[in-house]
Image 1 (cartoon, protein in one colour):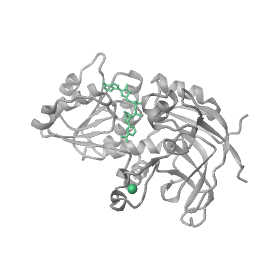
Image 2 (cartoon, protein in one colour; image 1 turned 120 degrees about the vertical axis):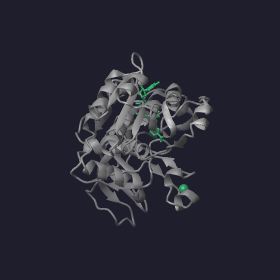
Image 3 (spheres, protein in one colour; image 1 turned 90 degrees about the horizontal axis):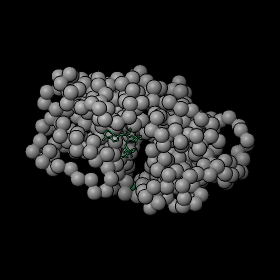
Image 4 (tube, protein in one colour; image 1 turned 180 degrees about the horizontal axis):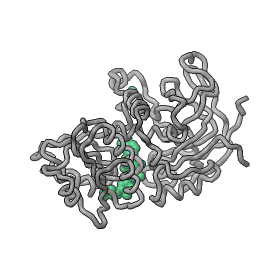
Length: 350
Ligand code: NAD
Ligand code: ZN
């Protein structure tokens, strides 16, 4: 029996914080699927929305349920949905795309001009139930722990970035050991990178990057990448770069450290007005590729295949809370002393 009302974490007013409250349970329309949420993970984007920073103020229209990293089971199918069944364990692609624009028709839905973000431009997953189009549903193997699937959306960002360029036998620089940087380490390792060097200014996070298979981790507060390169016999510079910090200084450092002809995938969202030294790009013949989301839906296949092949993401999951403890969960995320933080929605609590 699906209740008419459910609990959800809502950005209620244009202000800091979130409110746990009763809202109407969505009803799946034609071509839609209703998912009973089991677990959700907190993304950096959710922290921005919680903190009500400049980006959120111009993007989010309250009142709105937030969240886009989740796993759950199908609770109901809207009319016309016949590829899935009630009870199936699923997650979902977080971008709802138009399906008929040039990029969508070319199989490049991740570049859709009319994309809508779940939990950003429409109601999200930090709730007991979520309704999404059938086309966004991703069925997952029941053998994968649900608390890992809960952050597959972020894993998809990591995978899309880290597989943008061939890393087999290559030396890779990853700037930023946030959850996505940590995952990128495991992906590059699995895909046969020679050396993987990771930079951050946070020892806790660099520790997890090391556990995920980094050859060297560099805390820029007291170490240099040049020293690590010497030790690892990286002579001409890095072949592939994954910028995953969103920090302009990190981006500039990466461009300096790339080998001539190197390739750089840019996931981190550098602030407006970030300046780079174009001489690095032009005279070194660098390739820069911006990354948004993940390929729809090719990245999802690669992600699940890599986990099946043995990629272990469990070191990245550092904190678990019940959804009623969301304030503690956001505090941990804001502290920087965390990997992924997962909320449980299955246990009934007052
Ligand atoms: P995060 O903020 O948790 O991690 C960023 C890390 O960079 C932090 O650990 C921080 O200490 C580190 N850092 C700060 N300054 C640095 C410097 N100078 N050098 C090296 N590291 C430095 O973020 P995340 O969730 O792991 O995501 C990574 C980035 O990707 C963020 O910028 C996020 O906004 C962005 N992102 C982009 C997309 C997209 O579609 N393009 C999707 C998801 C996330
Ligand atoms: Zn489109």
